[in-house]
Image (cartoon, rainbow, N blue to C red; front, side, top):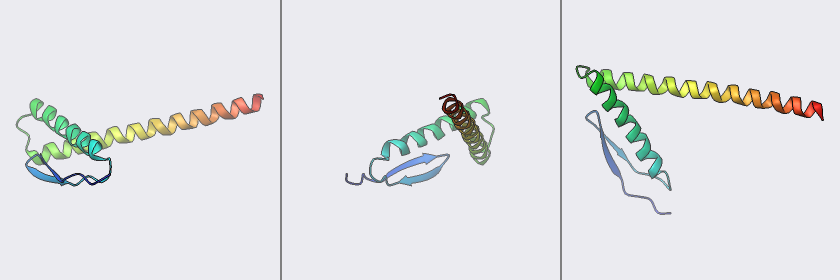
Length: 91
């Protein structure tokens, strides 16, 4: 695949330039859309917040969600391993 053209996004007044490699253009757009959605939601609830405050709060929210997903993933993997071990022992 050829490289796509560079794209520019505006996130809280910051110009974000992105030059996708291979087929990750969809992922980059999805990430930007997610961040913009979170920013819009927070700004609609708290319009008096400064952009820097919004940026920090969105980053903290997304980091919290990431950690929760990672913890859930680890828990599920451990449960799966235990189930497999139990199944193998019963054979």
